[in-house]
Length: 435
Image (cartoon, rainbow, N blue to C red; front, side):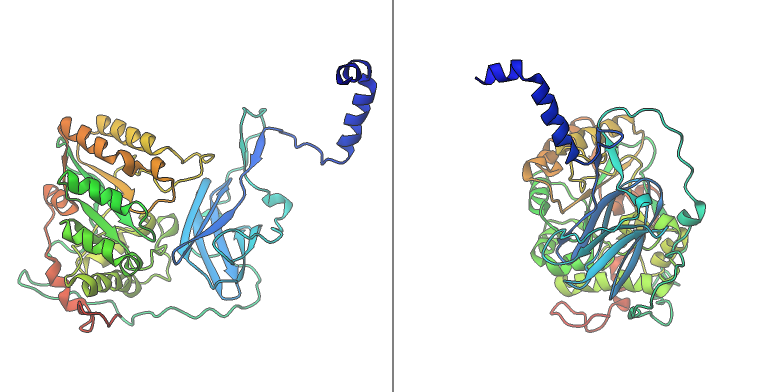
């Protein structure tokens, strides 16, 4: 019966298809285009926003008690910020005032309101097949890219309590070398080791989560490998047992600020981040570490998102911290999770890419990885980290800490104990205190 209907009723089938088509929205010009929506989720005390932009711009998140911004380059966006008040209604806009999304921050993930995006702010699309040739897009407007603050736009006033700002820069203590730390003021930025030496710093950042920490630390312990871990104050307070293990295993602990803020969008210092405030961010994290472990952090730091300037690095040196970045092409991007995003690679592919980078490197290499991961366990680089270390050693690479890499570069090795004079007297290892 079904066969006869299909063979003998072609006109009826055609009519039915046409009738169904009346109830469907017109197909887009490119049927292969897939929209990449904006989304948010919570990660501890942080709010994480993911999406994409089709040109360099500023992103502004605003609500009744919130107004923060960040610079976004063309392509995927992964923005971590301190979470606004739960239940607050917020909107996400670009520098041109286009509303990209609107949410009520309830629960743990996106509960999107009607995202009233203007037609010109339609979602970025990713094309599964090669698109037809089209006119070249206009270059991004410099005025919207080359700025640190939110562009002026008429808005109703919103009460935002100003953060505490120290009245003056913090003065570095004088020690036996005289006048602060030797070499301070150079604004040194360590991003690679000495030429011709196969040394590698396999560094890890701990920001707001610790899902991969135990596996990573166990792998390092089993291979007797000491490295440098950069921790935020928030991580220290949230995961004290992980921090104690890091110290017990003999790893170096560098400063990653307390709240992981944006100091320098587009690598231009946000003027709201003064010398005193930046130094305070570093020392608050140091105090949290001192309260937990009874000793200051090691004399190295890493700026959140890699955002720093010569001026910012000099301010950090004034309180005893050398800046440690990472080598070009050695950012593992292990935080990228969505498989439809260009930055995503499987855990195995991440380590294969790093190994390929090592084969082309003729000097010391600094690798950036993270203690936190939202990936499934089997898809984390940590699952194959041991094999990566074994292969690197077999090929003649030696793993070092940040302080050892600095010494190899001829930079002075500072003592962490000289910073004791800058820490709050009440911030002893038994708790209490804080600046």
